[in-house]
Every structure is written in C-alpha cells, then in structure tokens.
Length: 369
Image (cartoon, rainbow, N blue to C red; front, side, top):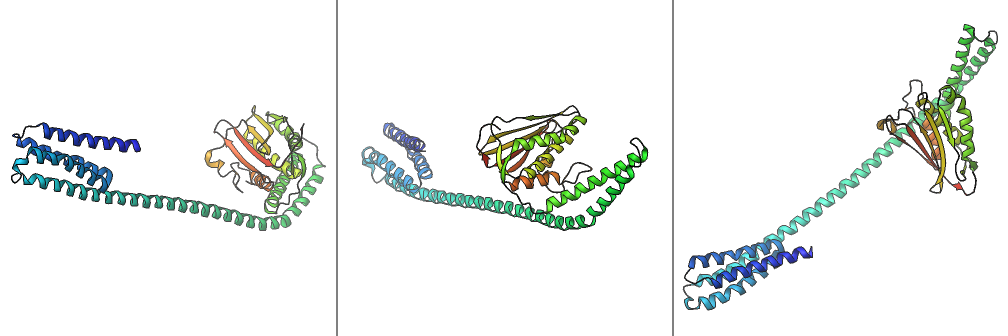
C-alpha cells in the first residue's frame, strides 16, 4: 500500500514538472500553447484530489501555484494588467483542488461507511444463519425426542400385548413341530412360524432398547474380545453368504472403560448390516487401533455403498433401505456409542463399499491387546 502511494506521488510530481518545463521552454509568442499548458495543470490537481482527498488536492494546487507563479512574474512580468487572468488561474487551481478534494474525501468516507454497513449486514446474516441452523437442529432434536416418546409408549404396549402371546405361540409351535420330521411340509411351515415369531420378538426388543433409558456401567472392557465374540456369532452367516469375514488383531491394547454387553450389541448391528449389504464373494473387514486418546474401530464392507442422501439419515430411528428392516439397528448402535461418549460416522462411495468408523474414549494404557 505504501509503495502504491509512493508511485502516485511520483506520477503527480513528474506531471507537474513536465507541464512547467513546457511552459518555461515554449516561446511567449505561442499564446495558444501556453493556454493549453496552463489548463493541463488541472489534471494533476484533480488526480491528487481523487487519490488523496482534501489535503492532496490543496497540496497539489499549492505546488502548481508555486511552479506557475515564476512563469507569470518573470516571463509575463511586463504585461501584468493584460495577463491578469493568469493570476486568477492560480486562484482557480486552489478552488478546484479544495472543492474536488473535499468531494472526493466525502465520497471516500461514504464508501467506507457503506462498506462497514455491508460488513455489518454480512455478519448479521451469518449470525442469523447460525441461529437458523441452531433452530433447525433443536427442531430436529425435538422431533427425535417426540419420536422416542411415542416409541416409549408403543414399546410399553408392545411388551405387554405382544411378547406374552408370542411366547405362547412359539411354545405351541415347537410342541407341534416335534410331531413331524424334518423334510415334512408341515414341519417346514411350523419352522417358518417359529422363525417369524422370533423375528417379531426381536423387533419388540429393538423398540424396547430404543425407548428405554440406557444405563451404562463402565468397567474395564476389551474391545478386541467383544469384536471376537461378534465375529464368532456371525461367522456362520458369513459362510452361508460366501463372504470373507476378517478381524485384524490390533498392534496395541484396545481396552476402554465401558459396558461390554452393550458395545457387543452395537458392533453386532454394524456387522450384520455390513454382511447384508455385501454381495456373495465380497468381504467384511474389522480393525481397531488407538487414536486420539481413544479407540477407533472400522467396519469395512465391499458392498454397493450408501448414497450421500442416505448417509445423512442412516442413523435416524425408523429409517431403512431394506424391505423387511425396522430402521432401529443403527439408531440403537448410535445411542449406545454416544452413551459411551463416542462417535459413529459413515464413509461411503457408491459402488465402492462402506466403512463405519466408531470412536470410543477412555482408552486404558497397556501393552499387548
């Protein structure tokens, strides 16, 4: 900025000296040239006023007066009365410099005020936008709380009105199944009935888990052991689907203070979703490592991926892309993870698989896992 001002000052000084030299070096009998030269002085005066305001305009007009006065006194000295307008020209130089500088300075101050106003409006807009985002987030939380409240009421009714009859239906079906041998059509029908009652019972349990306040008892818990239990539980399902299930052992201790049973349920929900999203011949890889004073567990599948629109909603209660899904599995998972002070997020590219990243705090120092 300083260099820019120096360049402008240099150009003004150069233009005034050049015009003055033209005055002093031009013969007096060339009146029309002298008239042109004395008008040229207005150019640096106006530029100085525009660039530097009132002080610049007055300083430049005084400098021009100082340079032009000797020309009048010494070169036109014998024609004082005839060339009176030349003295008036000096007065006009200072008037133009002062008025133009004043107007330019006011315009500059007005521009600064408008810029400050624009900046203030921009800040106000950002604050309003932040407040709007907060209101939307609060509204979303309220809707979620309303869903959970409704879910709690539904869960209470389901627990009383459905689970007990389901138990009776399943018990009766198991007794009836004993009268037939595997391969018999009725045996298969009864077996389907038992499996469907089990599925319905799991749905009720999911509702109950989602609705009930989760009491987490934090004790030393090995993440690796819980993951090993989960892989054992789903190993047969993975084989039937012809999916490779890999659990990579950690290089260091992956123990935390947490509720192992609840974490196992959360991990199981993630792995089951990964297996269901992976086509035959694909793979699901599970790995854990110590990061940021905690543990990060990654669940990576080679499925079709999740669209960006679904990623934003995938942890919402009741949201599902499966025809027979309840939309509660990952919602329960998120609730368990957040109950441990952790986070769960999804990284996915359509056609390139999905990775669920779970971070849990309170890692316990130690050596081998």
